[in-house]
Length: 462
Image (tube, rainbow, N blue to C red; front, top):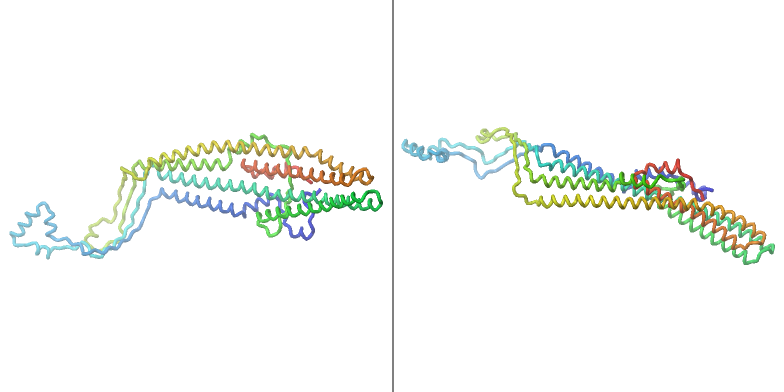
């Protein structure tokens, strides 16, 4: 039996068959949500690169133009008055007949003009910051790791969404195929009832029962057709295709699954949500280190080199370059460093509690999903005998009806029971595939899906 509903040749030309693996690759490369998360990762990588530059010296070139209210001059009288023996020198000059105004007129020197222009290169290189630079780099690295694991979580969620959309279409295709079988079977039964009525072998009510059942089956088939088209539209939009997407990968089951403990262990080791909490703890640790670093002195090297000087006495006497070592010692800080250290410590404790709770929740989720998968397998396998019985019952009821030993209602009931068993089986297979994809997603084994489907899977047919 085909796993998909029959389509016309025109519909086949307009459809786009796609395997689940190809669909996943299309989503990975074209999904806007994943692209946004990748851009976020790039953003924090650039921020991490920026943090690495904190180890480099800061070099700046400066140029300044200054307009003074008057030129700076030095007068002999000002120089004499500033000397310890200035009074004695003034009395000696006065005794020799030389007054201050004469000295000023003869020996006044101009240090700078009113217009002053200077330019220089200045460098500051921190050599000890109390661990604040390393802390800032650790925080930036933690933010990058958090963004990467957020991307991984987004991929897992998108993988589960694709599974629901893709195999949802496969499910509706098989349900439609079953409804078509029921419609065809009841049409044949109705036509058979017409002949028997004409031959006087059955009453008119039996033929009417057959006709009503056929009409209802046709309505159910049309409903299944619409449901399949709706599911197909959702898948087509997700894959960003111009023509309707048609799954070429059928529903499947596996004879068995690895033990539950393997999925739990892998989940607790590789689940991105746990690594996000680890990255947050790294950031909290870095923040605490940075705040503690404010208690330590900051040591730095500095240097200055003059590029341009005016042709003045002050410029000639000033040195061309200077280097040195500086120390900043915090005596009183108003940033609340003590409270921030305690806050960072509380954040670390919060992350520890969140991680413990997340591990517990993940264990419950994996166990629940694993049991749902096993239940779906048991239901699918357990209905095999019911399917054989329903098929045999349809054959027997048809023969009995033709011999007048059974009513039309018996034939209809047999057909509908067969359809219900088939639908229940494919629904169980769908539930199994959805549970399997969730198990593989949370345990970080998305790439193993093809192994379960292609090499270990048993294709489900309606």
